[in-house]
Each structure stands twice: as structure tokens, then as C-alpha cells.
Length: 384
Image (cartoon, one colour):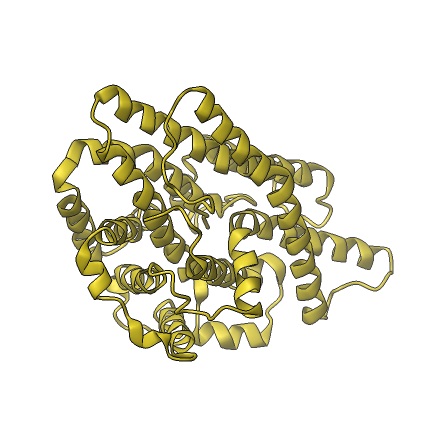
């Protein structure tokens, strides 16, 4: 596989992050009940976007890293590849993550008359968990027990960082048995009841993404190409149908709840499998695809930014109301538009000023160290 950007993967990134943004509207942007959101959530919950991100991450990372490591003939070359991979991931993900952790902590002190950003103590603890990459374990521990803090979405980022740290080592240890180890990991989780702890270390979606990447290097992958989806709008219909099914499965109306997460991971892998052929099956070329690709390319920043953006809109509304000025209160559409505009602006600034410059610096550092670059495509993982 080449390092060329796959547009359908960008579309899936956009679908995933938009689902997460919608899921967090109630509670993070709207503290009062919005009847329409309540009705939608009763039948559709789009939090599965996080699991779709996991599948994408496993696929994107493995399609470059596994061939690069297996092509190395010496131990020194393998460790050089791993070092380069870790450095690229660090420069790709950590600057934005740490920036927004710091900004949320500052907002908790200086922009928190309404209490939208939570308490200082909770945010300090959450910041430490985000920086030290144990946010997923703290999230499980805090679930329905105590306040996590504004950066609760960092649980998924910590899980991905743990994956990036351990996955190269797993490749070296398992060697030719890697596929079997990953299949066992998926099978065990598929039939396991997910406790809060198991929910935040769920790796079945990541493993399925890796398995898809490994399969894409085999001749059989080409033979299984879903060419029927090339018919006009049939692929879009398939995407909409699978997304609707995933959204229903994420609700309490889904009666096979013990198998919910594993089933969501499998359907997410089906979407990534369709996207992996790079034939625009899920969304034809055109303006809608370009818009979704823009969202997908900024999805990492959007994921990090949307909660503080929601909280900032609440804080601004509170201050306007306190000053006797027109505010967003009682106007959900205006509130939603204000939050969407703020997220779009901040994510674009973050992409141009932080993500891309730091990504280039990471690549330059790897070159200076003499580490051969892997073929990991530039639109890195996100997380939720």
C-alpha cells in the first residue's frame, strides 16, 4: 500500500468525529434538556464514532509500520524504525493534546464564572492523566463516581498512545503469528461483558484495523473488492445504513447489549474495509466529499477542541445573560451555530499553526537521526 491519502478514510474520520460531537451536545453544550435531542438519542446514539476511529487508527498505522519492520534485516534497523515511528507519533499527537490541556486548565481559572469548565482540582488531576497517558484508567475509575474534568475525551487518546507504544513491540514478539494473536484478542473481547475498565482498554477495534491492513497486502483482498458499491449512490446508501444500524446498537433499545462493543467494532471494520480500496465507494468525488475530507483531516483537532468550545459557549452565554445582554439561552440553534463556528475556526488554526508545523518538525528530526521513514500516511489517528 502506498502512502497516498484515501479519501474514503477521510470521509469516515469526518463521520466519526461528527458523531462524537453530536453525542456530546447534551450535557456539554446544553445543560438543560433539549426535547429533540432526547428523542433522537432514544433511537440513535453516535458515540460509536470512537470505535470507528480505533479501526481507522489500526489500519492506517499497520499498513505502513508492519511492512517497514518486516523489511528490516538487522536488529539495529528494526529499532531505528521503531524509534522513528514513536517520534513521528509523538510530534503528531502530543503538541496539540498538551496545548489544549493547558488551555482548559487556564480556562478553569480565568473563564469559569459559570462553572462550565468544572473544578480546579478535577482539571488538575485530568491534566496529569492526559499528559502521562493514563486518562483511560482514570476515566474508568471516575465513571459515575466523581468529576473527571473537562478533558474526559482524552481517555481514547491515551488508549491509542498505549497502542502506539506497544504495537511495534507486539510485531517483533509475535512475528509470523501476529494475525493469530490479533484474532484471539478480538475473539476474547467479542464475547466478554465490558466492565468500565474493559470499556477503556477495548482493543478489538484497533486489532481489526490492523488485521485489515495485513489483509490488504494479500491477493485475496483485491478479489473481495465490493465493486457493486461503485454504482451511483449505492455506497452512500450503504454508509448511511451501517451508520444508522450502529447508532441504534449504541442505544439501550439494543437487546444484545453484552455484545454491543464487539459488534460495533466489527461493523466499523466493515466500513474501513470498504474505504480501504480507495475507490470513493462511500462518497463520490465532489463538493460533499471535499467538505467531509476537510473535516476528516482536521478531525484530531476537532476532537480535542469540541468540549472546551462547548464549555466556552456556555460561559459566554452566562456572562451575556449576567450583563443583561442578548445571549444564546433558550435558542438551541443559535447556540449550536456559535459552537460549530468556534470549533471550525479553532480546529483550522490548530491544524495550520500546531499540527502541520510539528508534524514537519518530527519528520525532520527523524531524518536527522538517520531513521528510515515508514509509509504511514500523513493524516494520523484521532481520537475521541
